[in-house]
Length: 257
Image (cartoon, rainbow, N blue to C red; front, side, top):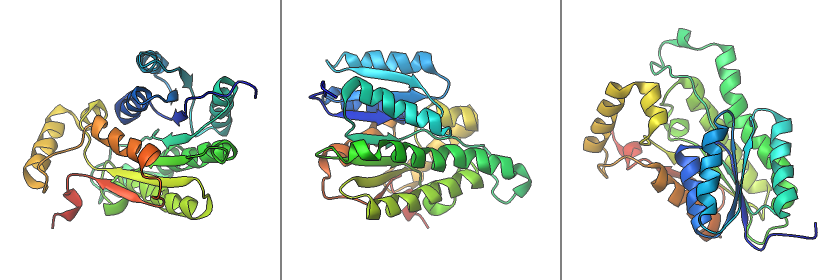
């Protein structure tokens, strides 16, 4: 391609809100061109793209379902057609089914597992597969997977969600070992403030869980989308000797007995 962007380019899946949107805005403020995807909320994705462009960069919003290989390939192709390069892939798109009582196996079935794995695990694999050859051409290539403390502790919105994130953690390590010089890392947040958890839990349970964590975890705090985005930015831009890392961002919740 003749016209290759002078600015670095990041592809961020599931970036119409929450951690993905915060990451897009942070990287844009640091001079990155941004592709953001969403599966259904294209209006919000376009609004985030416009907000990114206020930082004197370019942004592209694409409606894409990462569980569909053709959509993953199309996202990468549109990005290359626009800028001729990809320097960072942030696999943020995720889904769950809220079934908090992990002892009640009747809350889940095989379809639930397959749908959650399709987005949380196969989607990132397909995005990496589509982006790999372009990342290999970057002087500072990175992949950051947005995982969860659920995949380390076996907790969270459902057993299917937890095990999908555990598998994503294992894939992160395998890819880090085998895809160098691409750096592959994951962030593993705990409770994140925002509408996704509030909608899934209901406001009363959300506020109760948030208050409990803020009073019991060592740092007396929960994460915000912006605080998670800052760690993703560090993996993307700054931590050039880090790969295969699973960074727990839960205020110390995993340390509690």
